[in-house]
Structure formats: structure tokens, C-alpha cells
Image (cartoon, rainbow, N blue to C red; front, side):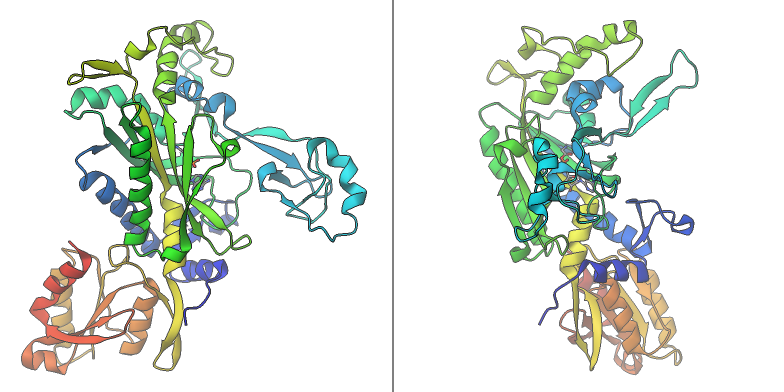
Length: 487
Ligand code: GAP
């Protein structure tokens, strides 16, 4: 029977096998920043590539983009982030820990001193909440807004120096390039622009390994459509994105769609549904993997206002926080970020459906879902049952013994096959141990070259999950693997 996975098992395997390390570990680590090791960087790249293949390569209506992390600061004024992108936080008066108000849990009913301390925090409705760090109930300071964007200075001289932000989402680079993409391609609405890349947020609550970090990679699509068709496209993307996770092997029981309540919606969204995964932390709760939002025409309209603000921004000393966004033009629907439909002879600002995923968070879900322990030849083995297209190494190649010409056959096969996909040649230790190492790395297939190979040119190919071995011609290995990897 499959074992129930704990996050600690995953963290320990990730460290032991070189998937993921704490950032700056030799200096004691940097909180909530992580580095991907040799296996982890391959896994993460495969997740990113699988996303790109599904949403760009396989579709005729989505094109790619790769924007800079730093943008003109007015872009963040227009998007609303400069003024509004903050979490409401409170500080525990006992232990000084800062926590997001929406992450505070209610204290259990049966704790005696709840009632005594409720009054002190009644005003901010925190009286029944429990500090996740020291367990004190209802002893919180007044909630305050905590800004999430990292700030830095750009420019060497006083004249060109200005405050800029590291992007907290990749989406705004897409909106800022909407007109560029329209002018340089033949694409027509409805269409999408996709990009992957790093985003940064000075998150208050981190923990849970790579689930919520301060530097992370997003994979976002802004899909532009005619107003009135947005609900239909929203349904389309919900289904597409849900199935993407299933097709890459996530178990159906661990995945669900959850629609946001009105009070959960971001300032720009008309509706949002989250793809949620049942992560093994917290109380084993469902957690967001990806959000699919209907952003309406909010962003393009806001950037038109941003474009109209530029002169006064220079005149007023480039102070973005004090800048006042220009009012919307009366004929905003004909503005520079509008779209002209030449079949319908109609101009409008498109609505946007935004499927926004996290590459690190998806990687964690794929790791958790793939992790298993079972028995092989009387021993417990840890195995990562990755979908072949996500596995960091696709094929292990082992000569049974390190003599009789078997290593030569193995290295020749390795040198040939590595042109097509990641392979690992291993001739050290007993073959059983070599299998175990590949099982833990999630390698779906291993080939063994033995005495019979020299006689009839066949090898055994062993499948990771069933541990079943087939004998095939060594010249058939490439075709066999291509079929399994769908390449
Ligand atoms: N453009 C919309 C947007 O950024 P979001 O729900 O804030 O929406 C989208 O983020 C996705 O980015 C999340 O579903 C998650 O997968 C990932 N993400 C957001 N914050 C993250 C963090 N601090 N660490 C890791 N991934 C994060």
C-alpha cells in the first residue's frame, strides 16, 4: 500500500540526492530562498518545458515572451501594486512574531484562558486567534499593511537615479508588451501571451519548503478575448490547466478546483478559481497551486492611465508613490492599448483570462505526488514515480560487470542516446544498488548489458514502477524510449 508522504521525507530526499538545497547554506542559510541541485534543476526545467509545450508549442493561439524583471516604476503604480500590494500583518505581543492576519487560526474552544484574554484584542477581531509561534491567544498588536515588493535603486547619477521594484508577478511585462506583440505578429484576438520567469515578494509567512518563498518562478498566460466571451474562455482555461496536472501524473484525489469567495478576490479580478493540491503540511489542507482569474479589462485600462501620467511623473521628481495616476480618458476604448477587430469593424479593450502557475510550487507538488516507499527484493526502497517527461534522468545504463567488453557496449550506447535525452551511465557497485539510486532519482527506465548482449545483441530494460524487465534488441532502445517519452 502506498505510504502517506510527509514533507520531512521530501525535504530529506531532496537534500540527500541533490534536488534542492537551502540558499547560502555554508553561511547558515538565507530564509525562504532555495537552490536547485543537479537533479532538481533538471526536474524544474522539465516542469517549465512541459508547461511551455502545452500552452505555447501545442497551441496556435498563444505566443511566448521573456520580459525583464525590472520595469518602469509607473507600471507598478498603474497596476495597483505600488500602493496596494501588501499583506495585513500583526505582531504577537508575547514573542514578537509577525504573522499574516489571514493566516492566523482560531484557538481551540476548550482552552481555558481564551476568554480572559479576548478583550485585549477584541477591537481588531484577533481575540480568538492563536500565535502560530508561541501559542499565546489574543495578544496581538493593531494590524498593519506590510508591503510585499522588494525595492532597489537604479542609475548611477543623481539625475537618472530612481526607485524601482523587483517584479512581484510576471504578468505586467505581458500587459506592457500587448501592443508590441500585436504589431509584430499576425495574431488576432482571442490570443494569449505566455511567459515564465522569476518574481519576488517579501513574504511575511514562508516555511513549507519551496511552497512559499521570497524568490520564485511563475508561469503565466494572459489570454486576451472579446468582452462577453470571457466566461467561456475562463471555463476553457480551468479545464485545460486542471488536465495539465493530471496528464503529468498528479493523482486525481489530490487535485481540485476551488472558486474564490467575493472577499478573497484580488483588486483586479471579477472571478478566480484556484487549482488546489492536497499538500502534506499545515493540517494536510488543500493549498493553491495555480490561480485562474478573470482580470477583465482592468490592466490594459490602467496602463493607458499610466502612459498618460508619464509627463507629470518627471515634472514631480519621479516619486512614484506620491504620483497621482492620470484619470481615464473619456474615449479610453479607443486608446493605445485597444484592439481593432477588422472583421467586426469594432474597437475595444480586450478582457483577460489569466492562468497563473508557480514553477517551484508545481515542482513541489510533482515531488510530493511522486514520492513513495515500497519493497524491492526484501528491502524498503524510496522511489519517485515521476511521469517520464518530468524525470530528471530518463534512462540508466548499466553493464552487469566491469569486464568482458560490457562497459564498452554500455558507454557506446550512452554516447549515442545522450544526444536525445538525459542518460546516466553507471558501472559501480552491485546492480541492485544501482537500480535503487535511479529509483530515488525518479529514473523511469534502466538498461542492463549482460553476457547475452554479446551473443545476441539484446539487453534488459527495467521499468521503475512495476520493476518488470523486458529483453529487447539494443538497437531498439532509442525507439522504445522515444515512444515512452513522447518525443
Ligand atoms: N499574476 C497573478 C498572480 O501573481 P498569485 O496567486 O499571487 O497571482 C500565482 O500567484 C502563482 O504564483 C501561485 O498560484 C503560486 O503558484 C505562485 N506563487 C505566488 N507566490 C508565491 C511564493 N511566495 N512562493 C512560491 N510560489 C508563489
